[in-house]
Image (cartoon, rainbow, N blue to C red; front, side):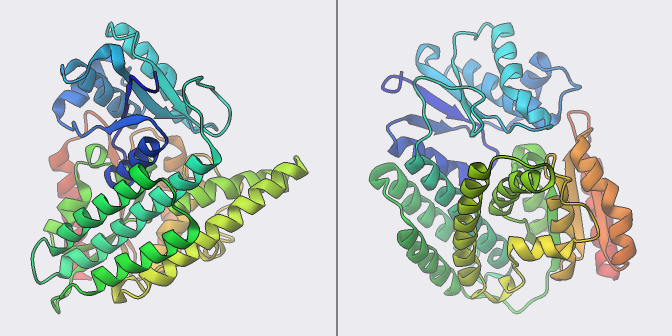
Length: 402
């Protein structure tokens, strides 16, 4: 199957996942990142997934089924890949919901591959190696770098679409580096990040002001244009400089949460050593990214994961780790302290972790930072895009007034 099948990937983070696709291609798999993102996706999702299930599950499954029904793919040589996170999030059950939906849509013969690090499912034709895992980390970090540069620089560029052309240029370079060479190491990553930042430093900028808006929330809705109705594009069209925290903080949080479990409840000393080594390595990668990105004046505000964690000590407990957990609160606080006092907290309707550590913490955060301007937006199949945009415009008008 490795030689014959094409594996389809969902588009949660289009740029980041394109690099992940390159990593898998470099390991001998044939993959394709899905780009179908129309109303048909929601229709298919509603047809095969109960609407009580969270919106990201509906979109991911709808996107897969819509693609398989499009006629573009040979169903005898197509497979699907989906992540399993574990823990208390409903995302752990996506894979079972997907298989059930495929069977209901008479597509049950299409195999589903689980991408997880917890040993939930073992696929005989797909194995995560140390080299693959290392390259996946670098792939996601490259996505963070390009996303941060695009968000910080594009609102001020003198020559329209110059930022976009540089993104496309580096996208090809990085994808090919994974897909063809497949030998990215720490030094190569460090040099490449430096070259990318240097390239973006050469963009001519206008001397103008833009409203600073931070975007936080549930991981899929926060990043996916399909999930948040192209939220970042809408904000940029309204003269905003947007800051969306990168996914590396989330990876660090997930590793740190396992360490926090051992600290609070006890556990294997070997597991603690392995997790500590991984945590130190990820923080080493993070320091390279921050050191280079801070060379761009508008990105001086970026802070490390450890500083974000320190900032919410006494505000929310570190044992709060389901979904985005305390990290969501920390990102809100960090953005406010960094000058992004206007914040959109986006989550699927009924997402329990986000309603607790996002929505549920807003009153406390506003009490500490009374000049913050935060709006919480729910996304689901029945939510009106017009209503969402009107609420955002109201928040922006308050920001202008302030």
